[in-house]
Length: 397
Image (cartoon, rainbow, N blue to C red; front, side, top):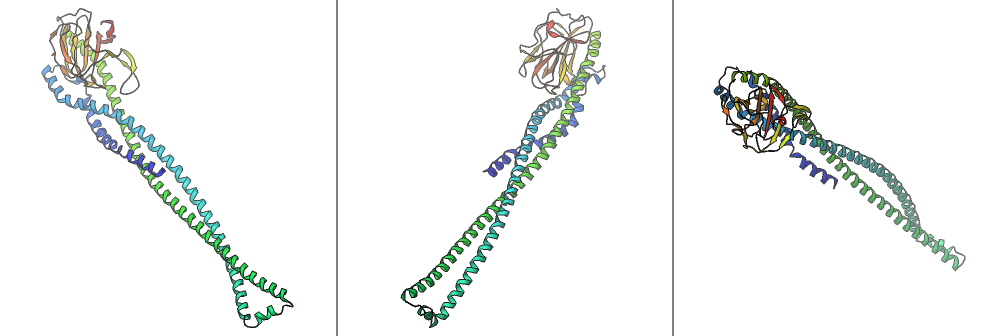
C-alpha cells in the first residue's frame, strides 16, 4: 500500500517537469529581451518627432506585451516550483525513513534465519542420533529373532516375567517410533519457518530496492526543481532591475514634463478640479506600498484604478497633451499639461487616442486601459505632478 501511494505521488509530480522546460525558455528570453524592453523613452533624442516616437513604440509594443505576460507567468511558476520542491524534499525524507525501516527488518530476518538454521541443525542431529540407536536395536533384535530372541523371552522364570519382557520390548519399539516421528515433525516445522522467513526477507529486500529506486528518482526531480527555483529567482532579479529602471523613468519624467511644458506655453489651462479618469474603483493608493510583483515596500507615485482591458481613459482636466507614446516601465502613456505647473499622467494604456500637441477638454477620451510596461494586469496608473514632482492625486479629485 505504501509503495502504491509513493508511485501515485511520483506520477502526480512528473507533470511539474514541464515547468522546468518552460522556465528555461522564459529565463533565456527574459534575460535577452528585458534590457531592450525597459529602455526608457528619455534616452531618445528630444528633437525626434512624435511620428518617429510612435514608430519606435509600435516596434516595441508587441515585445513589451510579451514581457508583461511572461513576468506574470514567472511569478506563478516561482510559487508553484517552491511548493513542489518542498513536497519532493518531504517525499525524500519519508522514503529514506522507510528504507531504514526495511533495512532493519532485513537485518532482523537474517538473525531469525541464523537462529532457525541452528535449531534445524540441532534437530537434525537429534534425529540422526535417535534414528541410529533405533536402527541398531532393530538390527540386534532381527539377528536374535531366530533362536536367541526367543531365548531372551524363554529365560523368564514364569509366565508373568515372560509377558513383562515382551511388553518392555514393544515399549522400546513404540518409543523409538514416536520419538522419531516427533523429531521429524519438529524438523519439518523448522524448515517451514525457515522458508517463511526467507520469503519474508526476499519480499523486504525487493521493497527496499523499489524504495531506493523511488528515492533516486525523486532526488533527481528535486535537483531539477532546485535548479528551476534558482533560475526563477535569477529571473526575479531581472524584474527587480526592471523596477529600478521604472524608478529612473519616474525621476526623469519630471525633467521631461518641465521641458515639454516650457515648449507648450500658451495652451489650454485646466480648471484645477479634476474628475476620475476612468469609472473603475481605486485599487492602490499614493505613497509607500508593498509592490505587487517584487513583494517589498516601494513608493507608489500615483493611484491605480481597477478596470477591464479596453475601458476608456478620459482626461481628468482640460489641457495640452505634451507626451503620448511609450515610456519605459509606464508602457503606453499620455501626459497632459493643465497649466500652472500641474500635469497628469495616464500609464499602461493598451491604445493611445490623443497625440502630442493636441488640446483636450476635461472628459475627452485620450486612451484605453491596458497592461503595457511593468504591470500585473489591466489597470490605469494615474499620476498628478506639480512642477514635475508627484503629489497625491486625491487632492485634486
